[in-house]
Image 1 (tube, helix red, strand yellow):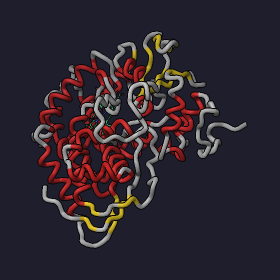
Image 2 (cartoon, rainbow, N blue to C red; image 1 turned 90 degrees about the vertical axis):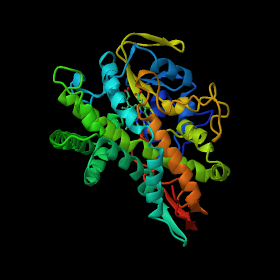
Image 3 (cartoon, rainbow, N blue to C red; image 1 turned 180 degrees about the vertical axis):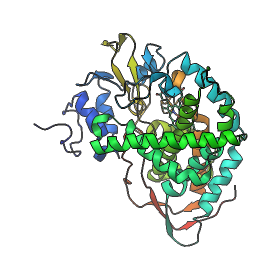
Length: 417
Ligand code: HEM
């Protein structure tokens, strides 16, 4: 029997081949389909709410995803068999009210004021990274390694007060840990063992960091969060560590994809690239369009706390729900010409940062980083050309983006912020 796992990736879906929701999800997860999962999402949307063979539900319509993101009967507990952390010790991403709201209040109170007025600094960081590669001769840069990764990493480390020299250690941990976000059956025994070990290393690293900061507090975000620490309150020592880990990982593993996916979209749409070069104001709508067209976080999860009637069917209480954000973002019932990259698209209510009470805390920062990085890149690069199209992708299906993005250029001019 041909299973979805053995089916060739070149079996491009067409109107006549009706794959089941289970098969379509398997195709989305297949590494071969990482460069372009969108035809499978399109097929999924024919049944915007569909049950898979393991009893979980795939939600792929824009309206239905939006509805569930705002439905209090949807818990943020993913019922993830890999997550052995007791429920109360999990991060706000996996918590429901009232605990979620208390934690989120503390985080936003410390996070948001620290990112206000950061644009100039972001411009300087981008210039420093690009200037390091500047030259009059034809050359090549890897947009991921040279810009898209180091920018958000430097920013989150600075914000939190993580010593720069710890970054390589933490960076490799973050990469290993995010692999654990993908569904369990896509991972080998070896990978699962590796994941457990990475979790232990993370706890050890974060506890060390907190101990060092406790001895020498500053005005960084970690010191700010520590001020809310109270053994009897919402931010107990374990929760402090978990929140720190969430912010560090979010800062390492998401914005990199936004900048890289944005660069890829620009290089594949030279007219958009030329427009951004002459009109920097385009960056705002352009980054929103990247978040819609090729979102860095492709899907999220929930579970049903009650029977939920939706789209003519019922998701039974206790079910796992997968919200296919990237599929909703290309829903023709919501977006005109959804498969087209339209850099000045209006009415762009994409799901790239989620929605409802868990809407991304880092959205403003991520937007600013991407707007500044992409604008600087198109100004500095002369005669840019993709070296590999599609580029090699990261293993991860949920946090999806290029692993490397080699771009050849004729010249790379320095840029004063
Ligand atoms: C382009 C970059 C980013 C994207 C696409 C992104 C996407 C998302 C999405 C989709 C969610 C909602 C998940 C859900 O509802 O299940 C989320 C939540 C969150 N994000 Fe981001 N994120 C990005 C960058 C960041 C950054 C830089 C930070 C902070 C350093 C951050 C911190 C958070 C936090 C703390 C939450 C949980 C909020 C809550 O549960 O209330 N994100 N993000």
